[in-house]
Every structure is written in structure tokens, then in C-alpha cells.
Image 1 (cartoon, rainbow, N blue to C red):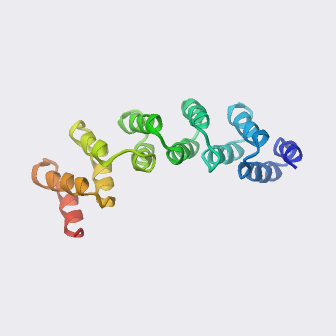
Image 2: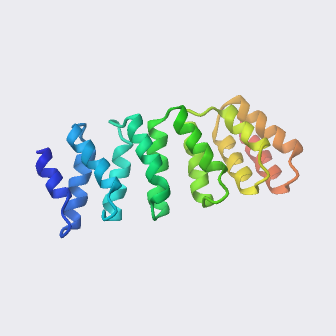
Image 3: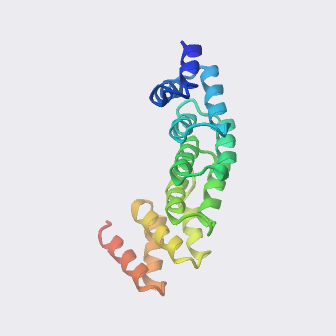
Amino acid sequence: GIAALIDLAGQSTNLWLAREATTVLGRSGDPRARTHLRTVLQRADTNESVRAIALRALGSQYATQQDAVLLRSVYPRLATDDARASVIAAVADIGGAENVRWLTAIVKNPTEPIALRRRALEAVTRAGGSMAELVAMYAGTTDPQRKDALVTAYTRSAEPSATEALMTIARTETSVNLRRRAINALSKSN
């Protein structure tokens, strides 16, 4: 059935059929299906909705570090923020130290849209990054948007280091809004 699904996924006349076949292939651990998904991702003539399905599928339960390398390499060439967000999510699901470094680089990149930087920040911990790394990021930035995103990340964490970071922000931050957010988060914690 994999060969037939690959043929259906290559449909250029019936987009619905191509999306459905790609979705089914994405749930398969068959090497032929995985190879097809990698090919779909790299082809320039692939429909964006089919590409998004392939992106999410490559980050699924059958993902490998090689898939992560491929996803990271196609990221700069993707045309939409939705596709880039799919790569961020897939790379986070795969996890590993190299993926944490890559996600951290997106967080620190001022040319990335803030929405993607926030997604990457949330993905850092999902990929295996430590709260200590996120706490260190706050001291190393003057970017108010990154600081705001970090406060959000600390607020969502139950780790003691996140609470300590919020207490430090509440005491020393010069931005009234960030101090207020930290105090508000602390008032809701145990």
C-alpha cells in the first residue's frame, strides 16, 4: 500500500487526495514513506499545505536526528511563518542537545518574527533544554520582547530556578511592566 499512497500523494490535480495520502504516509514508519516525506519537503514545487503535513510528520514518533538536520536546513527557505512554526515544533519533539542549540539561536535572532521566537522559546524546554539555560538568557539580553517571552516561560514552569528568576526580576528589573508581570506570577504560585 505504501507505493500506491506515494503515487496518490504525488497528485497535482487533486490537492485533497495529495494531502490525505501524505497524512497517511506520515503515520507510517515504513522507510519508503519516510523517504517520500523527505523528498516532498525538499521539492520546490510542493504545495504549501502538503509541505506542512510532511513537516509535522517528519517530527513524529518515527523521527530521527537526520530528520532534525533536514528540518533545520529547510527552515530558512520556507515561505510562511506557519511552515516555520511546524519545523520548530517538529525539532522540539525530536529533542536533543543540537536541537536545543538551534532553537536557542532562533530565540536570540532579532531578525526572526517575535511569534516564532516565542514558539522557539517554548520549544527549548520541550526539546530538553534546562530552565537554567532560560534563566541565563534573561541576563544576557536587553531585548524587551525576549525578556517578556522569558517571563512567560518562567511563569509556566514549576521549577524553583524559574521562581527565583521571577523574584530577581520583581526586585531588579527596570521595566515596570516586566516587574508587574513577575510579581503577578509570583502571587499565583505556591
